[in-house]
Amino acid sequence: MIVGIPKEIKNNESRVGMTPAGVFELVKNNHTVYVQSGAGEGSGFFNQDYQKAGATILDTIGQVYAMSDMIVKVKEPIAEEYSLIQKGQIIFTYFHFASSEALTRAMIKSKAICIAYETVEDEDGSLPLLIPMSEVAGRMAIQQGAKFLEKPVKGKGVLLGGVPGVSPGRVLVLGAGTVGIQAAKMAAGLGAHVTIMDVSMKRLRYVNDIMPSHVVTAFSNEYNIRKYIKTHDLIIGGVLLKGAKAPNLITRDMLKEMHPGTVIVDVAVDQGGCVETTKPTTHEDPIFIIDDVVHYCVANMPGAVPYTSTVALTNVTLPYVLNLANLGWQTACKRDRSLEKGLNIVEGEVVYKEIAETFLLEEPVWA
Image (cartoon, rainbow, N blue to C red; front, side):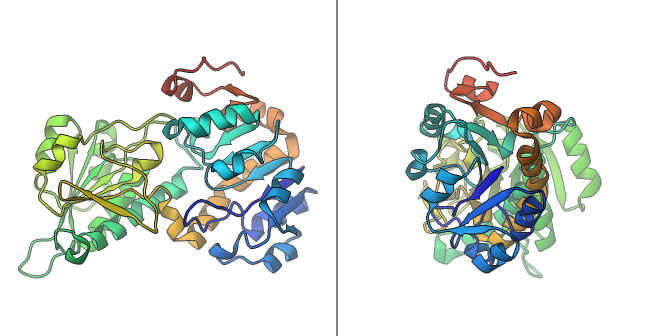
């Protein structure tokens, strides 16, 4: 199979779809790999690294799309890429279709095979290709939240770890999944007082078992959320509904109940956000303020630490890429139920229930 690795062109996205090590494995399996010139530079991987691994360097993104059977990316295609995608071409990347009807319609029109990292699902319900980026984003959420709590950027002026004689900052984490656990771990490491909320008592018991005593749990419902947002300095939105739009746990009217300078980091922005006032931002312009509450809603948080993120991503995607290349998408998906769940749109048909429901499209047809 011919595999193409284009340069990401989303704002401030420095990750790349595959490391030279991943390219080496594909070439070893007798596949051809085309890499767009400069695609890996933001992550610290250069043209010569890919050439040594056996790739061919192409000058333009158009050449990569035109000459490849499968495109391996990081982020969803943006408008400039829509016309480059060919009928029957495999696009393997993070799509997050539920947050963008325009993207969904464009991929339906392209008649490509759209396999989404974020919906590949193991038998135990875990999302193996989403986990590493969720780990990065969860840890980064505290790093960024701590920075934007500083007064020069309109935050509350609170040091999360506190100092002797001054209470530490208070962090509220919505969701005890991968993002929430990693955020709580980082916040606890800084010495902050952490409250983590979830609707699953099983998850809350797990948090209680693994976290230090200054991380406490609370059941997630509107009454409790309204109570805790009044007293916490940093709020992390880490809620995920597989393939569907995130629920609005914090509504616009709740902002007035928060202390001025409170910071919200909505990691769920890729799936529409779990805060009603969320709108996607970029690393170039990461925050906005509504009712004196600072919102950090960068849609590609791991893109700020591209070396770590690219290596972590290739570690988990490469086995699936190899299966797709070795077997073709139909055989690979029929043999691997986890990969099959990554199928979102197939040759113009939506085959993932939650996406169909989000945009009131027809029910899935591929099986």
